[in-house]
Length: 117
Image (tube, rainbow, N blue to C red; front, top):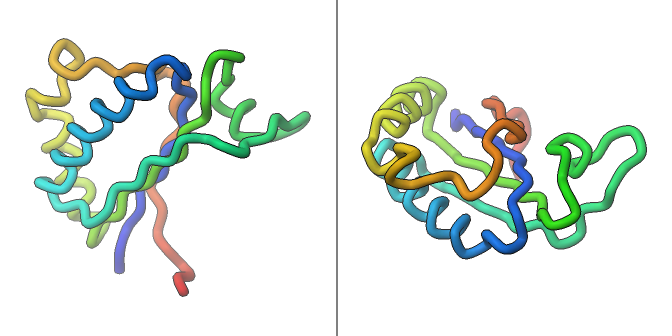
């Protein structure tokens, strides 16, 4: 069964094109490493919450947008191996492909799908 990595980040609105370039490079590498699908979503209707919300979770600032992303892998084993290779890839190094957002405020995790229709 497939395995999914999910991410939520706050990206400065002014960095949309930089983010797309960074994400495109990362997506190409992930595909080379076995991912079957990579989806990046630019927040359009992401309300602030009082107790919980995406903006609160990533400490979104006024000049930022919430980005919601996921990567589909054939299995957790493929993901573990692929993520290791990706992080070692020279194209993903900070001096080559700097993150256009604060990586300390990214929320991420791996998920086992339990329902898909």
